[in-house]
Amino acid sequence: MTTQPKKQPKKEAPTAPKGMRDIMNDDYYLFQGFFEKAQEVAVYYGFKPIDTPIMEMDETFTSSIGVGTDIVDKEMYTLKTKGGDHLALRPEHTAGLMRAYIEHGMQSLPQPVMYYQYGPVFRHDKPQKNRYRQFSQFDIDSLGSEKSIIDALVIKTGMAILEEAGATNLSLDINSIGDKECRGGYIRELTNYYKKHMGDLPPIDRERLKTNPLRILDSKEEKTKEINVDAPDAISFLCSNCKRHFKEVLEYLEEMGINYTINKNLVRGLSYYTRTVFEVYAESPEEEGGQPVQIASGGRYDYLGRQLGAKKDVPAVGFSIGVDRVISCGWYKKLSPRIMKKPKMYFIQLGFDAKLKSLNVIEILRKAHIPIAQSLSKDSLGAQLAVAEKMEVPFTIIFGQKEAMEESVIVRDMTTRSQETVKIKNLLEHLKSIK
Image 1 (cartoon, rainbow, N blue to C red):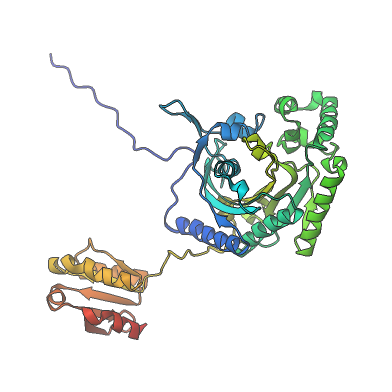
Image 2 (cartoon, rainbow, N blue to C red):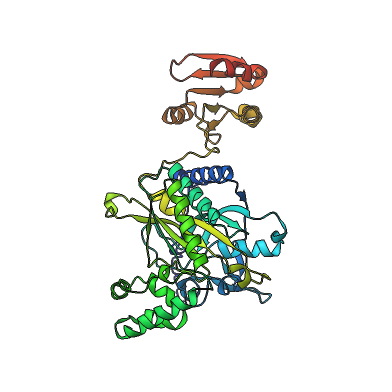
């Protein structure tokens, strides 16, 4: 009796990890267009580019973002290398930037140093519409000055980027959470307030009361939101220096015509923030309820440097834009990146001899910065012309066996259907005359 071989289960093709996606075709250009516009604006305000690693030593984030935050406790992707290093995919850009500032001795440069950076960040968050586990941020940061005008400069630059991208009716929520001189008294008062409501606090916020009471103000729990209405506000506890600093920031915003709302419960979710904190909201599409959506946030983080090993505090402030959310908003201008060139010519080749020399002709056009489209894998004239018609390209260049032998091409006007044979050596001059 012969036994039948076991039927192997059908192997399923791999898919992108949950909460992550492929960005391609028009979507790719939407992102690229935003990044180019954001860089352009940032450069004019005096920011320079920097690109920090996607992975850092995990202590870069655990010692800076802080225990008791969702990012460190729940959302950070970590791994251990074969060499025993503990690494983490960056959940945000700021800690890596400060690490670079310290590592490369930027304290010795004229202060402040101002940088922009962009790229993917990673958080093991619950995937939702327009919310991913890998998403893109554009950040602008100034390190090395505690002056209030720097807070205003960073906010103005970020708002200008969003407006250039098409945002209208932006709203800015802003608060000051003080510094080490005055924050202690506020946290004690806040802790006492929450202890009076301990029985009504959800478990997650009772735990936060032990590790990071400020995080309760940022709670998404409905019961906690009700309790927070009467919670002590940080502004009432500000020392004279912090009061003056915050007052000056608001005066700069008013002078620049930036509307703002003081939000006493705004603290931001990361433990390194101090003094100025803010969030930026924009209108969302009606199909999403029409409620304002948060698209940017930031603040001052003067103590992060010391947390990462600097010998003294590094005053700093930053503005971070959630690019995926900007792209999804109906007001986004769909900015075209410089790399995206609409083809002016469609190159058609016919026969092996022509195919053999086709790349040489295409190289002539590339060096002359003439954007083309082509279907080199196709052999039929009809099939290639059909693609050119569909793309609405104004001219085609036809390169067949005869033309390959005579070192010429046929240039066809797709509108009038007229065509002309041109020597390859004269092609660029001819194309200039018909542009």
